[in-house]
Image 1: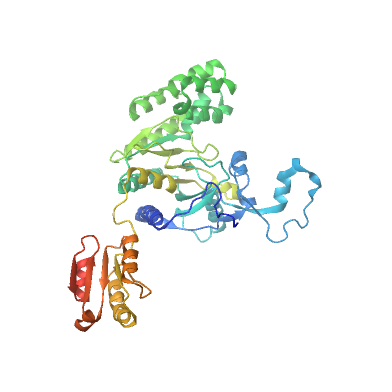
Image 2: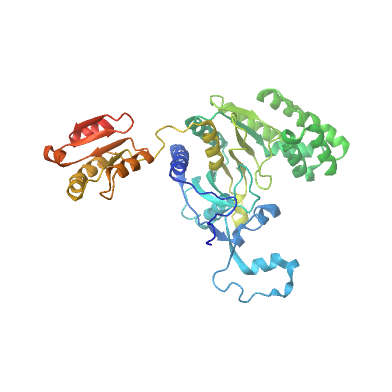
Length: 450
């Protein structure tokens, strides 16, 4: 018996309805990016492993899908090392890998094409990425990212505009969101203030789990990571920070008054928040936000949907030296990434797609034979030129079969052309919902459907 076809875990097929909805998402995001002067680029699905490895930290490197060298990939490979040297073996067998995100390929692109780019460079990129992660709800092995970045400018106006983009996109979708904002410099200031600068990663990772595991468990994790009780004590007002954005900033200004770095971070957030007072979305200064610790250096953002339980649906931040990994130090940038797959799930759950989001056929011409089909073809051309999505049934099959086709595809109108209609230069238009029929000229037909 033939094996039943299947697809790899963590991947999905998208049918016509799903694709129409996904394109609505991409087109909406693309349209807003363009409004802000961002230009689109694309990079290959696969990059050299030398480009990807070591850029995501050890955890990220484990999640890279590596591609076997083409053809005789074992030629010249030394297998005598044994299983404990699988990593070295993989390096010999694989020179390429599927991209894990769009940021590292973008950094590579900027360095490779720096002579052609006008700085600051505002780019957006909408492409799939791959992660060898354990598939679960809302987490896939293949998914799309929709990134926008500005490189070559330190101005906080870029952060402000990116938040305006986020606000505009979700307004167009009709999704109510909360934009959370923090600053890496504040986190660094906290670590300095408690005398644990080398523990910044441990502290932020633990604080980031506050929502999930609660205060006692966060403190227990900090102890496990070797933080002294005195330091944990000093962290309590920070972990439990509450009040309005202004109140939180005032508290943190007091707590971090000895830290130059921390105060700079507070000033940056205060500026961004002050410029965004007219946003429709909720905007929240959230100290527990600790994204991308490996490369974010300034403001960091995360967007949560208010009406659906799902992880972050957009995120991003400021990085100071992304291109340094490719030998071009000192180029500052800031970027955001929309999680298209999660936005798709949110729009589905809240049923927020406009009715017009479809590529569905609007008009089907029934095929009664060669002469009738020949009569219909110029009318089809005219209807399509006017923007009507229409098709002619390709075979002169039984009328019942053709009408069934229209019903199954939910085509709202059917055009019937027999001898009488041809003599009069007209056609009969049937409304499939009401059953009503009208004898019309081709010109009148356009008026009814448009």
